[in-house]
Image 1 (tube, helix red, strand yellow):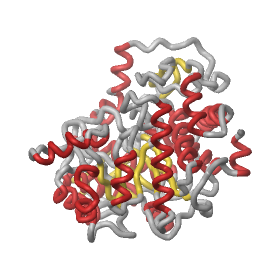
Image 2: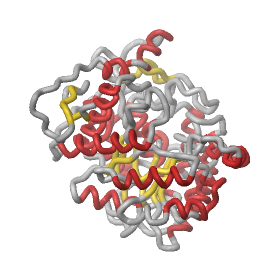
Image 3: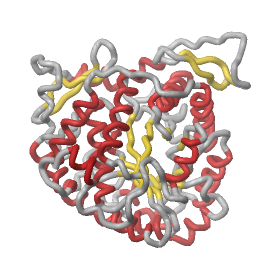
Image 4: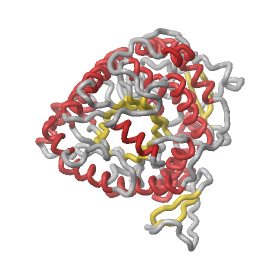
Length: 466
């Protein structure tokens, strides 16, 4: 199966609802909300919020809805529920333990429906975020509560977060897609967001992130899900990131031409700046990246990321800062460089498609052969032969590619040895870059209550004057 064949004739074995027009969503649901925001020229911003107490969860959703931004709500699942230990989640609730997320299975559909009553509607969708390689019970619980948007993927929620065999994760996610498709037949248009563009959070060169994001979205589509979003996590260099997001959009247009689709940027997921100014500047850079690259949605992070779980107020402040940054950024397509991210991602996707018409089997075989190989990932099904580094310009490069079929695209050089000291330095690169950025405070303030921040990507944006 070639990329050209997929683009012309569609993916094989895609059951369920018929295709949507390119770039359009059915009338209701998460994808339709994002499409309306895109048509109005607004970036959708979203927190990663989750509380164990239903009253606090409702309070967080109401605050997100009330933010001065075009926002979507989030229910992030707790760690017990993520690994299927629902009994431990229920014991924690009974003992008054403050969980690190919302136990959607433990609370049951009636409680979750009460949390959402009068909050969620077509103007404010809510997405469930969970991190599970075996999420069948989570999917069943969210569907029972009337929700229709979630995220993850058979690779991206398996390799970084569990030791579940990849083959089992693929089977689990087939079941989950089928559950959402059955739900769609009752009138809703469900939405799945791939987490594939966020593998390990950091130090993964963009070509592999783009390929994984596209492959997981294709997996969802092959199993009947017609509304998808493709993720990409902000990395170390703004120009390289912009090129990567454009490559992601280009491949998605070629391989998922009939899907409702959009791109979602994740604010940097690695070691976060410790200073409030550095954290805000990094978020501003992510918002600018989203607008420059034509992405439609942004997952925000807060000033508390390096220290603790953020408060509701800190999440709202991050949403509003990101929305202000996006509104101030000039819109319209801008040229980006071509350092080979698209070609690399396309080669990886093509290698996987050549293995099997069934994308689940193809993904398992690709990892088994090392055609896909995530650097620094310790999962038993990952070959572990690839390595990356940050070059002198601040861009992510391959130090070793293992068996990945991109040797003809990666600059010829001897394998580069990555020492433990170099790895630790790379992990802290973004933190140090933004914490060291200077603050410039001119007399004139372009936005009420804000001052200028000099961003580490060379731009400026407003920061709350604390």
